[in-house]
Length: 223
Image 1: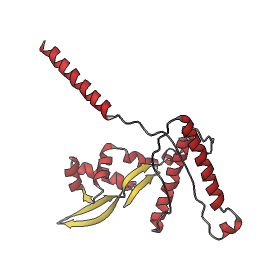
Image 2: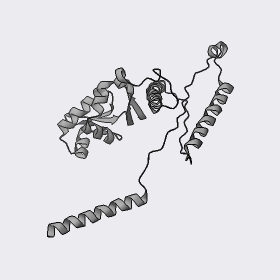
Image 3: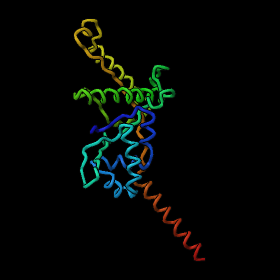
Image 4: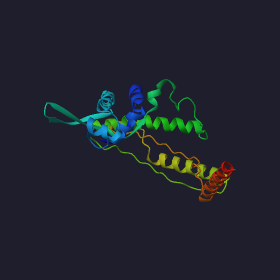
């Protein structure tokens, strides 16, 4: 089972988006039969079997074993991954393409780069799984707080210079390097505002306001 599987086929993406099938995939992190799943999701076994066949047809679940119970053969299935991500390839004709334009300060170009990363990593992960090899990758995730827009701009400028310096130091695109089996790697660096989360004070204020409104409604109904 993969940690994450990237879905490229539009039909498989459509199948995975059905709420019942999403629930089934969630439950099938652990192997189970249709009978066991029916008890968990609260549906008739026949209906669960219908959804399992659709998921299996699109390669989203796999057979683990078959158990013989009297005259019946019980099939035990498992999801092919713990989590799924739909690739922009599933919307190929309208998927973002970073080659259409290039603007370091465009949020839309950042999204295009992220879209390409999902596409490429999906193919690389699938290939590595087939070859039974570990995929070489590296990522950094963190948060940084700027006191002003000027500081943010200065940071971005210095980051760009530092990355360019490192690329110049380590990049070898010569014919000799390629002939010796050197592997090209994709480098993407992004910076964007973090999503705002409600503060404790805001949550408390909202809860208090809601409580006051409910009390007022009760008073009105009593009148």
